[in-house]
Image 1 (tube, rainbow, N blue to C red):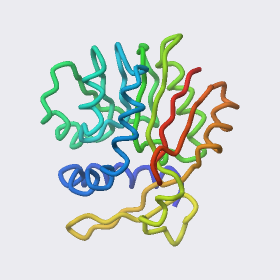
Image 2: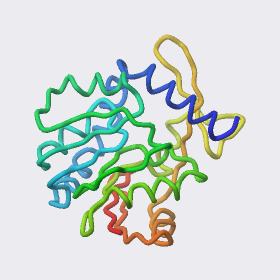
Image 3: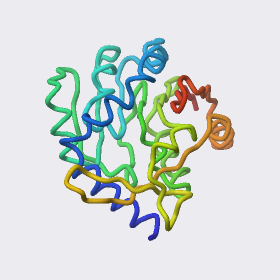
Image 4: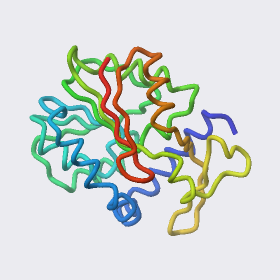
Length: 214
């Protein structure tokens, strides 16, 4: 399966999973949340904030506390509907395929969580080029993701174990999605080559937090 086909399968999975996402994600993230929130609340996230791959709004809630406004982009309309349930007054939502995204404006801060691992290597540079266009001069990009420590929790894909895992829904349907475990040092080096200065730390076993500036 090509990376493009994996991306299509990935979107299908998250659209189908929207209603049951929090039942598994919230317990998973709980252990690493305090350390991640300490970084998120350090004062870099402020003003007009863009959240990419906002999902069910788990992180949007915390962003809305620090920001004047939050603009959320996600490829799944089902995820957006789940996120709207939080009723956050300073948050707006747009459906957007992040693999085909050209920002039309800029924000003070850009944030995304558990998204970069779903970006194939062949799309990595283009994605970060779009992010650079989205952040204002002097702005910041912060993200949460996984390290290799989290690999043990996944069902590795037999066909493409280096870039994909298999995920199942409560109804038994199985999907193949992109899942690339990148370590903090690897990410810092790769983003440095693209012109970013990043502080990337494993803030809890399996979870990393990054603060990057162009």
